[in-house]
Length: 291
Image 1 (cartoon, one colour):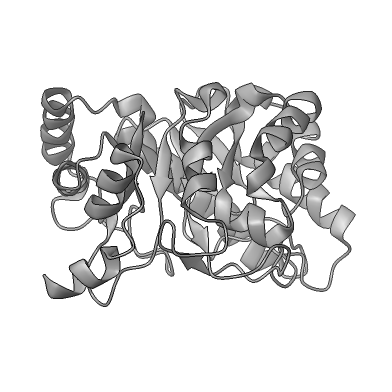
Image 2 (cartoon, one colour; image 1 turned 180 degrees about the vertical axis):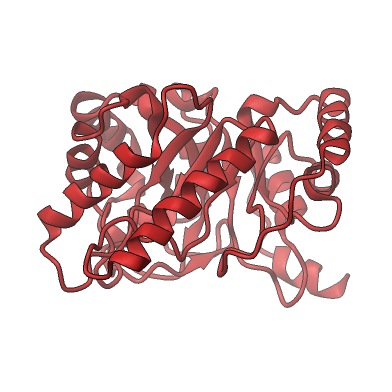
């Protein structure tokens, strides 16, 4: 099982991220190269990167399974404001360069919001932007994340994801990141995840799935709200999430927790331990609060 969580990328950059992942009992992780809400970025420090690679090797973390996430403010779907769109494209190109310097192979991107534009045009806009961004020599793959459908989000259905992928020229440079909370909130019943994968295999191909975000949801099925909950404490439930994590067809795919902090404490070590034991701990939040 390849499992980890979101970790910080602070002063020690990738080295600090690796240390944090190890402290959670993880064998992979996901990070932002700066704050997810803005585009302020510091230069990558090669010495810290090399030290991180060494520590990963010692800890049994496969660099090829580590995930980066692009900031939320990127919007490839809308063309109403040329300056904003051009900024999103140039920033994502630069972020791919930074990820490449770190030796990381995957960057997760939210497809974007169509705002006042037509949905079909927005999907074409995303593909057009990806065709500007992607380069045959890049070793980084963009992973389009499945979205909850909040507001005017694109990528809330399998067919929307397929529409984008079909219009991308360099198809080997684009994959998919599933998110269990987003799937639930978009209307996919995680209790029937096997059937969802069957459909995905026919429509898109399972080889396109390169990452799965494992999150419970605060919301009922199909409410399009996107509010994550800790593992087993939401409407999806522990057993259903365990079935996703241990799905044989996704055995070699990294699973990443993005669950909320409990008060001010990261829950990831406790949640990963619970998942490995395959036994739900209803006292997890209380125990974290006592620490």
